[in-house]
Length: 418
Ligand code: SF4
Image 1 (tube, rainbow, N blue to C red):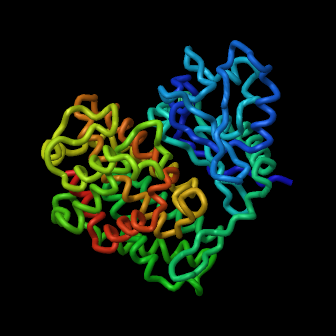
Image 2: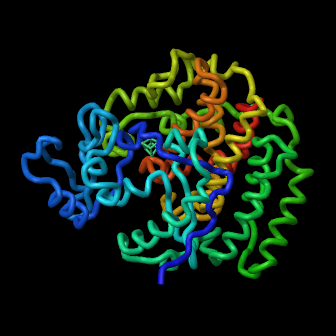
């Protein structure tokens, strides 16, 4: 009996616009069975398909594969008219499961699957298409395929740890997240203050002994913390001091050097350090002076000081950010297996840390209209969130912890919102 699919994002729309972007950046896992099935479908020497190899091993002896990409960046099966060659000839069911599921994510949450979405898809970021709620049946079918694909059900994943080895149950994790989602939905505040409030709740959550709390007590406790934060969290961005140049600015830009990139070698983290150009670009980000390295084709010619001086966030952009953070929160994509097995609190901090990155990039995309710039910034950041192995490295995770622990994260959020 397969587990049900819940938490469909009600505010989110999507339809594939066949832009082919995912066929240039997605590096899904292909199983041995899928590889053999696709190889069996395509007759040798078929002129409609390029000569092999079509698959590259993902680690020695893992039995897992990835699709090879052309030197220009596209998947080996991407056709000249930006379509999937396998789907065109054999139908959508013939595609690898990872490609069929995109831009959805199905996240195990005990007795059900939760639905996440990849905002690296331009159509998701721009909220184009039919309400995602209409995809419920398709997603139920995908969940059954996923159970078959990975050979385990939604209840085989353990709930993410809290702090110091404490363990909350899946329902209690969902209760904490529900209160945080209510904070993000509360339009009485600008979005930036809503996330600063979430951060304050996370700080208390880290210091709490959860062993004696469960069920409705969890909800009551987190709601009480939320109420207390109303007076605690500064109302306006200008009420917070600027980030510390050393403790805030440097770790922030070190993370930005990862998040700002957009290229087809996105997940080739092992190659990243071998490329002197990339190391140099990373160093220039950390330095934060002069021209911003063009690590992203959408970055115009802009200087770091111009980004710092750019004007604040128009309030109408809050809605796009609200949608992004609500989908990420309610899907639980920020912790556990979808985010490098991070604990509940570390995962929340890593999610909240994406806001100053998005706000920085929104300013840097200064040649684009504001609505397009914020969507592009979300797309860029979400390309990495939970997927780029660099973000799972201990020293990179430590940078996020450092920013949160020293109170620099809220200053950065306020600074780039002012
Ligand atoms: S990135 Fe999104 S819109 Fe573009 S082809 Fe992929 S799923 Fe479709």
